[in-house]
Image 1 (cartoon, rainbow over the protein chains, first blue to last red):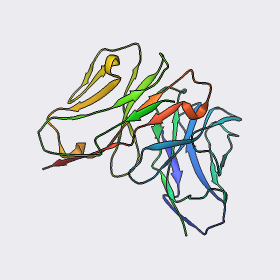
Image 2: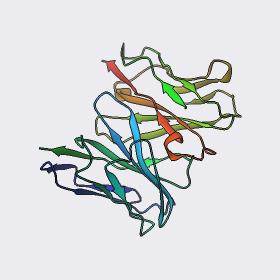
Image 3: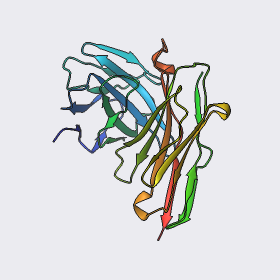
Image 4: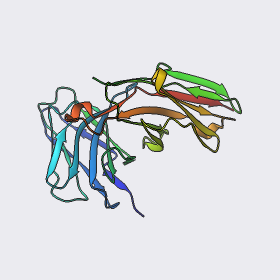
Length: 112
Length: 118
């Protein structure tokens, strides 16, 4: 079945450690996105990529990094520079920017 | 900068009642897209509708309907004859396809939590 996978669903890390969240899609979509969701808040765009080997910063890129070496993969690294990394992270993809996005199930990251 | 306001934080209605979720947006751009997404308890967002700024026709899809009014910068969502399965958080979003800056490109509202009481 086509879709977006994010793993793991729950992730725990110690403060000061970098952690990489995976996002894979088999929808053949060009564009991919990373969002952060905090309780009672909407989604905030961290990074997005319109094409392989290219990506753009969103609203809250500080403390995060991404890569887009393959069309189907868009991993997000939460670095130790991110002051408050505990949140729910959602990955999405679309056939092009401004088209409807398809979302993965999310990863809930807790930094202890 | 653009902004999306969903003033209703939480709404509860009894099953079979109609309910309208409000969305008000702000942008100086004349070309933009508006979206509604549903987030059930599982967490994964589900696309509901996309509307471009040049198409003000209202849309109906089954029990769902959307009212787009540029004059009031609103894009409201109505569920008719609500069902328990409609319980979720609903997000309105604004996309600016011609923006040169990624951080002004896509903005979500804070969401409305809808609870349908059986």
